[in-house]
Length: 120
Image (cartoon, rainbow, N blue to C red; front, side):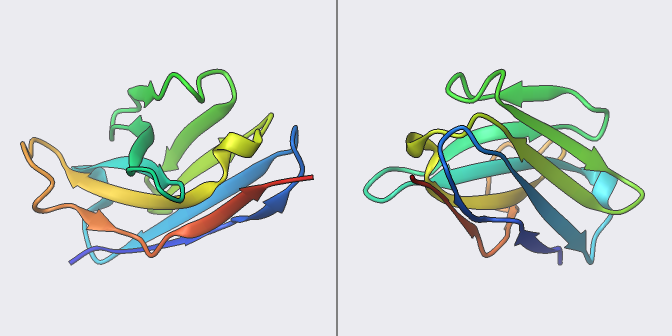
């Protein structure tokens, strides 16, 4: 059983920056692909960024060049650095742990979510 706890959300002005953190416990961190998802009001949850245990990266087109995902396997923590934030980035951001090799999300773990609001 993996437990994920996000932190770092908040209110920021357009153009500002935030760094989200997700601390994992209860599992072997390196056995999971770590993801950040987000869900805005009235919209479906979408994948924002992904990082494998080996460091391969994947980003949604809407955040490329602005967001950076990283992980510290020694600290069992994944980060999302968000720069040049836009109002359309406003959403609840969720940390996700996906077992390496799993073909479905049936065995994924999710954090409780952290609110990011971009507003002047």
